Length: 360
Image (tube, rainbow, N blue to C red):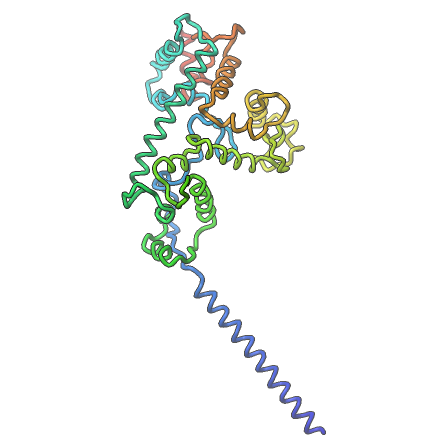
């Protein structure tokens, strides 16, 4: 009986050892399979995002659009729609001729030559300057498309885009091509992976019927510049609303608009006097909330973000008059433009232009 128990004990020990061995073996094999499946890192850590990426990914800043893609206000908007293509030029010209340049611009806006700018004249001018930005974007897009369409077939395939995107971020071209051909996973930095996923979503959205994961030049323009496409503009607005709308009710309140970029709770900024908050509060009340009900709907936000909207141009013309109309006659004189040149040409050049005006 004792011998039987001893034999049983030995067998049990052997069985335990065998089980442990099997578990260890399975775990080891599993680890090996994970290691073999783990994709090779291909990025040169010394290489960062470069200029080539600017030809591919949609830019965060869109000229003549009131808000950036990340929900921040476009601080150059007023200058972009007042100066158009002349904005970059006026930043380069000698200081002593800025006053003369503003006088020239004033005369071009003043169609009836009465020495005053009406709301209608300003609205028409804003639409003209906005169109200049659109034409510039189209020309730039055509140039970029020719560069990224490397096989010159008139289309940009997603794999073609993905290859150039990763190469622009410092990944080895040959290894990228290898994993694309094998349809295997690519190990990327977190930021690169998020950016590529974002671009893939926008790529698919810009791909009109037939949906073939190919973008022609027109679709590539919509991909990079959603303001050129009503459907892409709508999708961009939805993205912005999604980021700013804290309670997910598809309506943007004032408190959500002024608080979201800080990541703070709405109650924490309700009475804030911070300049940034004041600017956003003013933008919300005076421009975005067109019916004055304290809320901005998706429709209102789309109208706000559409640079070619007549209503948008009208809102900006009204804002220009509201800012600079010192005598409250509903029109702007040259003197009023010069007195408020920071609003019209930007802070970099405004101080000098105002000094020149006051001297003469």
